[in-house]
Image 1: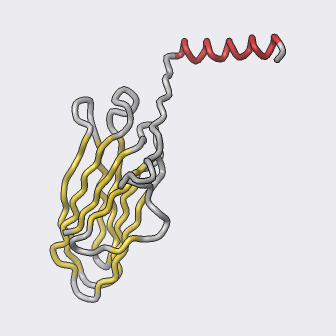
Image 2: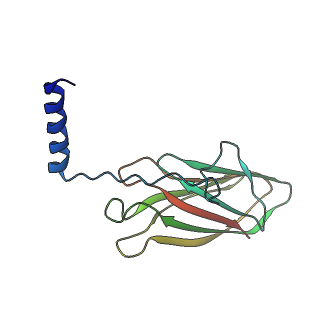
Image 3: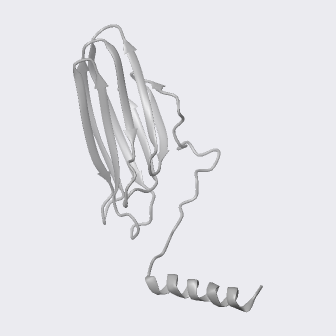
Length: 154
């Protein structure tokens, strides 16, 4: 290796150290971890089902249901755990959206704060029969980071 390359490398390392920028990478989930990245295919919306996923920047999980009868009192419970280091992303954004016949909503929320690393809540959905789509997404942005999310349909 030439002396110029070594010198350049030491300048780059010194610049990174002086910038105060620390990059911490959260490892991907282990193979047997129940929280895995969501797949590309929509998941069926069924009362009594529970789904776990690991969301990272730009990831989304899609749920779909074709209900012949009216959708009555479907309770969606959501739980999120912020996995990023507290100093890096104290709060990560997650967005829940619903689209169906005569029914649509968009619910953004943040998982975590300086003191708590979790967020949870529930929402009740009513609507006419037909195809309903539900999406859980983490938008790209400066504060996005990994989060474990659990969705339960009751």
